[in-house]
Length: 343
Image (cartoon, rainbow, N blue to C red; front, side, top):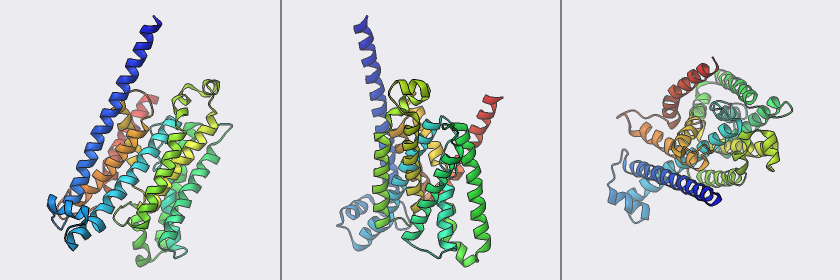
């Protein structure tokens, strides 16, 4: 009997591992296809051989410039930022056990936008100082949500409600700052309210990659409690987990991921909200799909950027506009389903 149960457990683990491996491979193939599309498509038409020569640095000056300075950095920024948003969304939804728990809905991304807009319109900062201010804005909003939602423990619904309130407050402050500024001063900060990967390159792209890798490593190292937190705090403590400490570390790492990405790309809406449920449906084993969420977030962001650039001839839209158009209907469906569930 015991041997039979052990075989069943091993069989289930093997099947779960193979399913995760298959899903990761399929999403990776999708990302590869999107990368190829992003390299081939553009105003300057390049063939496959020209793109390959540009990637290897042995093409003409124009080919190398288009591939390495224009298209490849944009693709890399979309992938890294999407990875950050997708992973952060999975952490938020798993820790708070709420499908509405997304950094863009809870005000983390809006806090970063507020920090960037204030840096430009209040202090006249530029360059790296704007990104630092945006990062600080996201962190401050995240800490405020935690402080205001804490009542002898962290409760998911209170965290979400406080976050939504601070999101509206941050958005109102951004609108007020823009209304007080001149047209010339307000125009450069508009992208900080939409989200774009067009101008992330060089040192900014390197910083984005290393910081996302660092905070993703923190999430990976702290992710084991996510398996027992849904069982309740008492049982989690009995299994050797410190629930409040685990939630704090995971949520801070997720906030840092969002702050890093938003501080350089602006708020790319709904990627964090969409990536985790898609990943959980693909993984289909009841566990937090952190790896697949990160990959799905990267694929969503890159797909939205390629679609925004080349989907409609003669029309170019920032990636944040496209993800907003995709994510808004899902949010409405989610709100409707939540209302039916509580009715």
